Length: 144
Image (cartoon, rainbow, N blue to C red; front, side, top):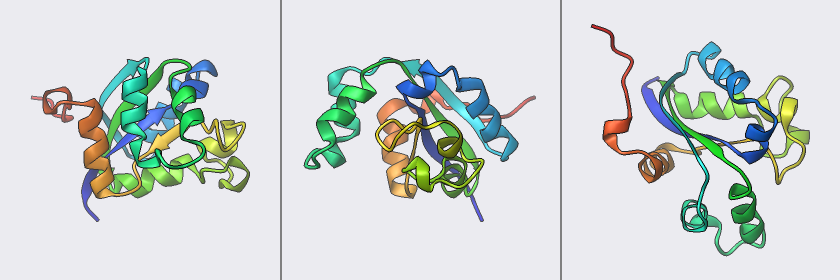
């Protein structure tokens, strides 16, 4: 196992449901550290740019509109196997298939509005973190 970083987003439906603290609590209880965090209201350019990998898919326009529909929380999580740990915490994309006790099983209403996003691999994590954060915005948990 190795310490790694991953990007996490609490989507507009998660913000609307006032779940920031609950979701952060789940990250920390699982041993993940939040080393960067900010609330944003994504512009069309940001939403289209972030989800450009899906630009040819039929749901792309709806996804962009959904991600612009309200503020989001973006955060960098760090810890042992952080990508896999976060994906387990989130649960399957389709809430009806998500494991009991996962964020999506507990809070998501549909596959389209599924509360959270998480990087799916190391290369994606680097790209996604760099999309939202400069190196200077990531704060290692050190105390002197």
